[in-house]
Length: 411
Image (cartoon, rainbow, N blue to C red):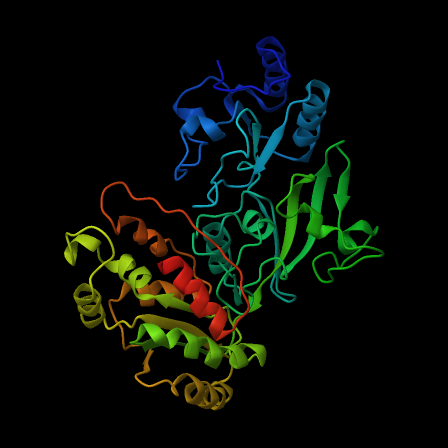
């Protein structure tokens, strides 16, 4: 029997509901009995016991019509549903429901790329489409378009956007770059947002707005509807690409780094989702803790200095990229270099300077729209069966705030 059930349902009522859902999607697309298949939908990195967030069943529809029928059954029996696209949201809950006993609506079968338009630069995708899948499709077709992948390339394009996910090209704010949703509401009504609500429109993926309020936001990080299609804007391949890295050797440099970066971002001289990474994050991509210390607790200063020396890293490591014609990038970089190089000890690295460096390689790929999974080498840092739990604070881009945030985490 299932590991957990909603409090208001008897086992017999729940089984009847699942049997009706099975009749809709087919027996092979329902997971009901407790076992490895059901437990694969747990949060693999949760500090809680598996059963805390274990679903009662899983149902995988193949399209809107099946979703509508499942929603009707769920309403009839008052079965709570939890929708996932790919369930690959590492460290943010994975496929697990918010509470034990929910039925997971797994949209992995809905994995069609419905359209890629090179002239206008957009894709229309279903929930199960991954970054790897969309990238490979565009490469196969020879389109001069870049996608904007999140760090886990196996994640869902649609799902990441609904979770307010980000990437690392100038199109890094995924919600900002979406255009048009199709949503099945709880009563089975199909809603199309923006221009998609207008009959005969040719602009569903071109213009984000329709008449009246913009509804898209209420379907992000929520359970108000099942998003079944989404348009995403794609970046036209630029004539030039210039990734770079700057290392800073002192822990106290963080304040100055943020103060130098802020005007470059506010004035859009650095157009992509640039980022400043601490030493141990960088080290975890390409080495392990045991190679530098066998002691418990924080790494000693001697180990930190050895890591910096061995891997040409700083205590802080800044990555960004410029895009466009070479003369434009060269002129822009003069301003960027003057600002970022004003901090004593700053060292700049470019393509060709860090051959064989996995952390440089995967970041350069991400900033160029090439999906990969290298970032998750970090789970090997402490050895054994790796895991990680993310903490995602938000603060103003000010040196004082960054330094305070760092000290809070450090202490």
